[in-house]
Length: 640
Ligand code: COA
Ligand code: AMP
Image 1 (cartoon, rainbow, N blue to C red):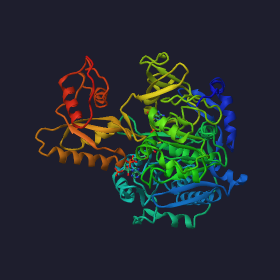
Image 2: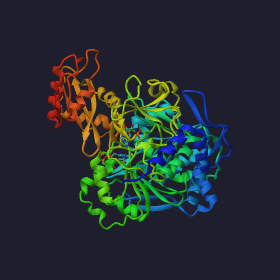
Image 3: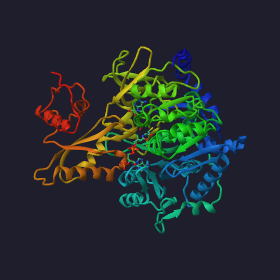
Image 4: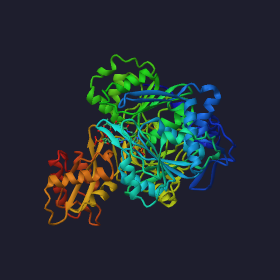
């Protein structure tokens, strides 16, 4: 799609950079404030800063109650579509207000107060959104944990967030069958040192969970007689939620989001990026356990009074690759957001787009893609089949909303395949070399963002400011380190090519290879291990483990690999998609002992590679290469 709006995009960007306080004060008019802010941007404590300091508001009020007051009560707020349970129903803003205020009333009655943490470990059902909004209503800080994570992952989050309450459900429903959540929850609570005293359990008809006495209450019983409770004014700078994301170590990072900046940024993005206003239908086919779900299933669409779709199913197999298109048509979705993996899955199962043929998609303006790099083939396939703009955009859990995007609501620009387009207003993105000097156009480097980041981005890591400063702000003083590498072309289009750390992206899910290594090392046959992300046609990347065994291991390779695969599933969860593992005699390392993961990845992905000058034993690369070849990887070219 060609368009001449680069100028408008640039003007908006320039305004956001030269007069950020004016720019974001204007944007903040989209929300209802209980008390105006003292300063739009408080930079008195750089590199820490605060947006809308002194202001007060309530995020739930802005997402729910004010739309009821404005006469939108009868409009559908959440359209639940669950092909896996063959259930579909709409929840109006009136009903949403009733559900949320009662759940909040119950939480308040059992002593959950402002600032207390509440963990939500739930599947894709409307109650998950009620739970998040109920926390926001009383100023409690929610932390949603993705349902595909195992009990151990939940336990580490319980120990970090120290929740007063956990909300969970009896089960999730996956194409493979009903996944019981309660045993995972019980296991996590038993493992964690922080003792959780209360749980609210949503019993679904597909599986009834037995409640643990003196700890669990049934969701429906809890809300049946609970009093409605109003919205508590909180400081704009108070935390709204913590969302854990993978870092380079096994310990996840608790990204903290505030109330004021978050609401302002999301409302701005709904209009300018996604082209969504009150009354429109918007659908982000992700999971509430990820940042996409937080920002664009729950908060973004509701903050602007739109209808949001909540989908419990997969792009394919539930029941077929036409489910996305039929759902868009049925609910008149105007903007649709999913991950490139989902499109690749549809393309694999329906290469000619047969399932699109009888569907009227005239309601749909734009398909947005994010979560992983979008390969040009996938982009073009979708463009050709849908005959609509397909918009790649780049962001992260930390930023909470897009950093680079095409402003489809106000200033669409030319689409360049492989690029998420231009820096969004508020973000000053630069590409720098190791010394921090800006590189020239088309030269790769580290992608950084000049401080301060705009409203809505992370304010710190939960109870770990030191790690926040070290991970993001210390490598290049005055800049935020995104962890991604890429380049900018002559027109300022950004290209995100890879991570600079050991994070991998599996089907749009961000995972730490460090965590995989920690888990694999627990096996008593394993002496040493390296996990790398290798290219995968469907999921973008999948993890591959190379293990060095202790002397005297008698287990057959096959039995060992099975045990290692189930160890990862048990400790990280099914979402890890860990299926590739091989034993090697030795791992390639530098003379200082650093494992050469980058070189191994290049070999696996059939990219040209060089034997690093610092390698301790060049023979080890051959061993790894042989193992990778046996697994169907590694046709790489060795460059002398
Ligand atoms: N609760 C319990 N288990 C879950 C789960 C959840 N919420 N989400 C995923 N899982 C399980 C799956 O059942 C699967 O288990 P299995 O190994 O027993 O089959 C495993 O985790 C991997 O799941 P998934 O990544 O969904 O892979 P898949 O092979 O089942 O499906 C796709 C492949 C492409 C259809 C799927 O990855 C997909 O829809 N991707 C889109 C990604 C996306 O929306 N990402 C969000 C970021 S924006
Ligand atoms: P998450 O925090 O789980 O949302 O993952 C964020 C990471 O996913 C980014 O740092 C990138 O590595 C990758 N990512 C997300 N969106 C894109 C995109 N559009 N293009 C390339 N990489 C992306």
